[in-house]
Figure 1 (cartoon, rainbow, N blue to C red):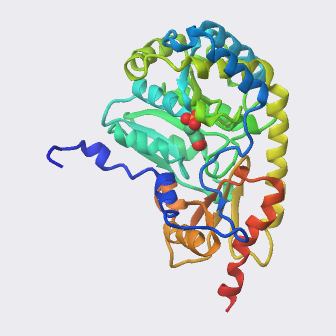
Figure 2: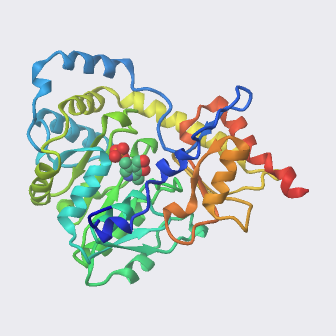
Figure 3: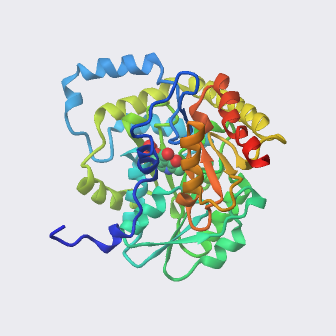
Length: 393
Ligand SMILES: Cc1ncc(COP(=O)(O)O)c(C=O)c1O
């Protein structure tokens, strides 16, 4: 290339899902052993017809073609407020919400408001790969809290406290976790909130998978001054099975949102109106549809776990929960990439290598079992067990 690229972007690895999907090029899968896709977390079911019909109606309204306010339409943000109050017992006011292009953009907004190049953000290992990728692109250093699989990969508050330095700009956690599925209990979130508050840094919570647990995830929104410490990232792509609509939100204090809107305007001006209508419809009408799907995901999880944990499976389940399983592969001499490649080549199964979730995680794979139906789980698990014979031989 005749010009220089940013050293920051050069230090970022290529998107893992694109990398892994490229391994499928030129492959054809027979009907008796079709591809099992446990790679990217996408609900296998569509958004309900009622939501799609609503969107069709909105498409015939010429206003849909126009920009909206940067933060989103007031009536959509109002609907979101009601949704938070129902699901968290309390929640933001409309001025404390900025609608975004997925949780992904909410993360970029939050980090742009908080960090400059050279700053640090604490992440828990295993960490959702887009977070370190985004931080490194901004020149911000991800500081990793060690992975403790004896604790299901959940954070240890004392270890996180030990990582705080004058350069720390946030503690960024994902609950339920991608990749382990582990949920951080409400009491521990309270502890982490108090830790962040003590150090005058924000606790940034990415709760993309909150729809797949059926109790309020925490009580932090019930605090009078939650916005002084909590920054919350939401995704409605998984909740309403509309990942393609790119629907998310940043929820934070009014002052934080005020500054975020400068970046929002410069990045995207405003979120697409059509997406906003989809969010409002989902929040207003789909509570019971979402709950039914959460129960279905729990059944998938139980079936997956029961089938996976058995003597003739050479893979070990290290942790699992909403949507994901985090497993140890049996090939000590192989990296996660080599193991995942072997799964594609020999088992027609695609999943993610552990090391894309952070350093020293080569012995793991992430499986998004939430992508497959209950009746597909047993044959998917057999693709792992098929290696038992070769390993025994
Ligand atoms: C933890 C986490 N955060 C954010 C995202 C991105 O969500 P969205 O599609 O809403 O941008 C994902 C997607 O898989 C995720 O797992």
